[in-house]
Length: 235
Image (cartoon, rainbow, N blue to C red; front, side, top):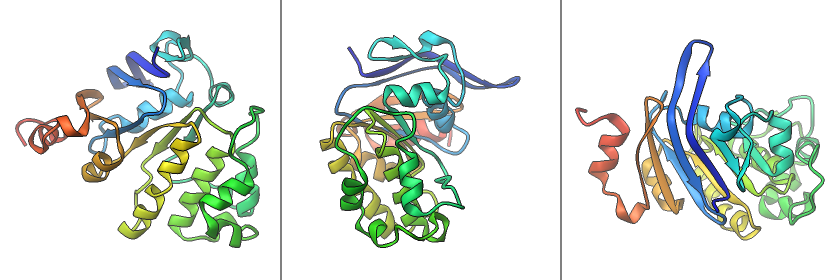
């Protein structure tokens, strides 16, 4: 049984349809990368899985349980945590207070605590009393990841981690992935950079205009096929 899967997933913003029959499968211990251009439906997929958008119950399954109709707090309580696009830290709270909020509503014990998050991102311990939004963009992203890890998730959803960050900072962010996986979490990461996605993923899904246009292991996919799936065959 897959850990997480979508079946014919559709999603709407009022009258606008953003997803058309999306099928995605995440096995325990895997890292999936979702790639595609702006407007491809990647973030809508993440918002659907995390419960920010409500869907038909059986369109999303977690360990075989229908969760598509659950709201975000219920999804998080099951063990699915989201690192949202844009980080969305609380500006009135310190780094440490932002991290502690990640435990709210989740009582399951696990490997992640303030101590282990600070071990993963030592700079956060140094800045723990600073306002979260006073940090650099890369450090804020570390806080957002740490906040999600504080819930000890089974699945970590990461939406556009590298957006707006310098390459050296992106490298440091992704260097944390092996430790996150070793903790027992499976990862789904949305990424516009195809090269970066292929480095970190066990499997890759490419989306265009709300549909999955290509999927497979990075070793099985060539650049031409990915380019066509990313931009369209005529580009």
